[in-house]
Image 1 (cartoon, one colour):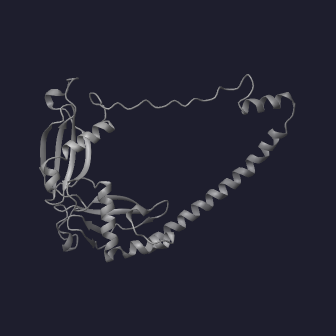
Image 2: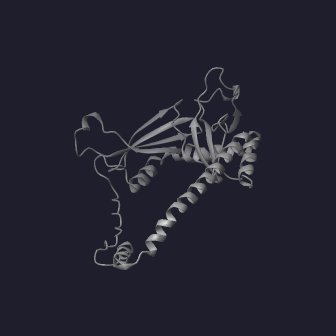
Image 3: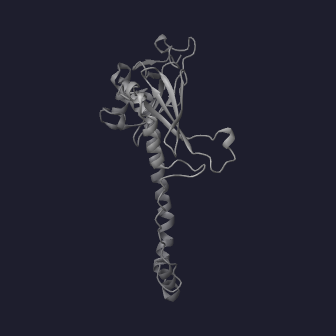
Length: 270
C-alpha cells in the first residue's frame, strides 16, 4: 500500500516540474512580443493600447454579470425536484414509525437516507400534462438490513406507497463512505492507510474529513472472500477509493468494510 503512494507522489512531482518548465518556455516566447508591443510608438500603437485597455471610441462595453433567477419552490411536470421539494419530501418520507424503529449507518435512530428522485409517472399518466408530481425517497434501515423506498405525492404530501427489499444494495451515500472510513481507521487493518497518509502529508490521519472518499458496494461470491465477508450482499459492505485532499490516491481496494456488522476484512489479492 505504501509503495502506491510513493509512486503517485513521484508522478505528481514530475507533473509539477513539467508544468513549471512549460511555463518558463512560454514566458521566454511571450516576453519579446510583449516588449515589442510596449515599445511601439506613434498614434497606431497608442490606439491599439487604448482598445486593449477598454478605452477609446472603439472599445467594447464592459461586461455585465446578471444574477441567476431565483429557483421556484415547486417544479411542474417533469422538472427536476427543487431544493425546497427535496427538503420537504425527505422529511415527510422519513416520518412516522420508520423514524422511531430504523437505524442509520452510525447506529443513531432513524433510517439512513440514500437518494431522492422524481418518480416515474404511472402508466395511465404518461401523456397527462397535469399528472401528479411524486418523489421516491430511498432509505436503508441498518437495524433490519432492509432497503425502504417511499413514494410521496408532492402536492398532497401523502406517502402513497412504501416498498421494502432485502439483499438489494444501491451505491453508498456520502455519509456511508465517511462512516466506512471511520470504521477502517479504528481497525488494525487501517494502520497502512494512516501510515500512507502521514507519508504523503506529514500529518496524522484522525478524521474522514481529511480524505476525499468514494465507495462501491461489495457483494460476496462463493469462496471469493474471507468467511467474515460471506454475508456481504445481505449486509451492506463497501470498498473505499481513498484520496488525500489535494494529494495522491491511497490504495485501499483490498479492504472491505461491512457497515452492517461494523468490521473490516482484507481480500486476498493473490
